[in-house]
Length: 596
Image (cartoon, rainbow, N blue to C red; front, side):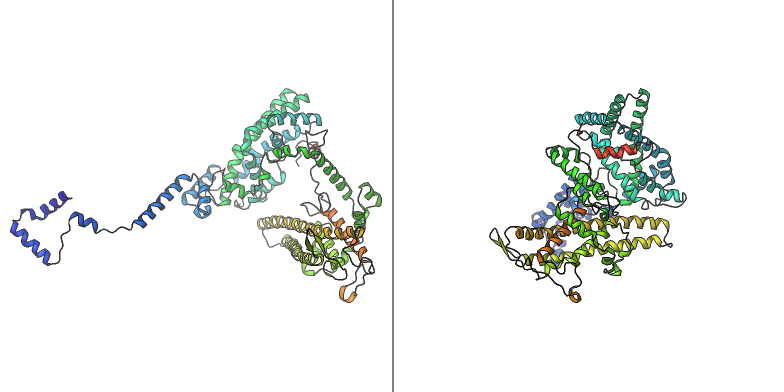
């Protein structure tokens, strides 16, 4: 520091002045208020807030450590709770744009799908996928012994190899690829955005995404199955070689040609620049744990001990499905005997068959648009049956015409009337769910009739509403099933008590009468209390029979004619394959090239 002071003195000429001249200048400086600060004192005048300094250093260290630990943008989002879309930088957008151009999926403007994408799908990609599909289905057209041997060999290699084969059978879906090409075929020169084809794009992408980590495994599994099937069937070696090549070519086309194109378009729809292994894709594609390859295969290992029970359940459901395919109006007592139905279910079916659905419909508000539903709509039938229960039997939950005693269970008092009263309000949200379903059906019909909406918008809106309709309809039936099961449990308790201890119902033999003007005309008017309880319990038993697995009101589809048959459990004699799966395939592969 002293050397710097000497330099300053030399520059301003102080060092050249005589001693007395320097003293005079110094005196003037002091008189003017100047002060002399030595090095030690100068340092002490600088003030530091040590606590703030430590705090700042700590924050800098944490930030530095955080950036060091974060390897990609997904981890950064998870750590800081930020939105990737909001963080999309210019370089991210440029990267997405360049990826799209490189893969020939978007136009120069970046707004529209390149026509070359559709041409590539139709001319270069789809033929190979269809050929792969034909080969895999041909493998499964083998007889049962060959399929059993295939599964045995593949299980010995990897438990999930046979599952891979099944996934490739259903990989090609004609509707999905038609949906992808729909707007292009409609008008090849119309500008189509990635958003227009997002739905079929996601469906195809989801299948590829789930299989992308098993490319080599699938190649080995499919070739092994083909070699084994064709050897046992004594197919010509030239055919085996050619079709083995089709497998290799098809899988390579899917993962090295189709996947990059779908990936780049999906980034545009997601508005995010993320790697293919990002967890963001699982959210975007709605992938659950049970969707992943291997989940079912390895779960089956733990379920094998229960296989005998499952086989029995499957046989019951199968019998139920065959039985239920008949119209309820056409069921005979012989049909019910064949099914070995209990007396409650039989009686409940006769009660349901007496329901005048048109009369129940007439009692519903016109604002619900019930008349717009097809008479075979599962949701409509379920709703009308619930309304019938509400009209004829729900008074049991709230009326004091039926006297029920309290009971002590494990030292706790159970007030059954209070419990039943608390159950009744659960009907309101279920009613709201049905109302939402009927409003959705109405909205669908309005869009279908609207000639002012352009084809692209109409297509997207119909798809969206169809999905909503299916989801709400399933939830409404599920909630109804849970409600009536809860009510039936209490009715069962009262009837069992009447048949044994006779402690709960005070007036089982009392004949019930209803004021038609106040309570409406009821079918149970003039019946004894115990008879009314048996009627209500039987009615609910038959409803549960129809709503549970295998029943005509169960499943995802909304049409009674389209019964959702649960998968069969493999039998003890044929554990190496799935019967229902093979039955489907036997129909499909009869005509080569025809697809499910």
